[in-house]
Length: 91
Image 1 (cartoon, rainbow, N blue to C red):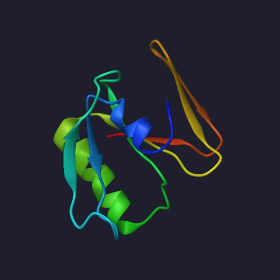
Image 2 (tube, rainbow, N blue to C red):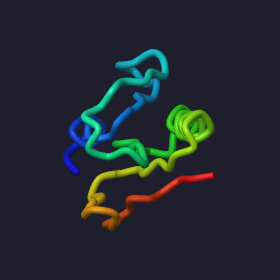
Image 3 (tube, helix red, strand yellow):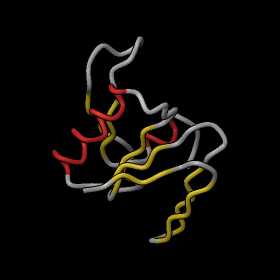
């Protein structure tokens, strides 16, 4: 999918979790390459990230995939493969 922002931007709509660089949760428009999920990059299981994942799922009804170091998401048409410690979160 791409690294960090590159992965996030491929989604129709992506969000940014609050951290030291971004003081609040925000939505941004993406490139619309992927419509059925969002990506939480650099996932470290923080309270802020987990709340952001829950917020996105609750407000959009779509899955969120998380990536950490040494993980990847491969999208090939409708097929999605998770490598390493990438995970999916859904309702």
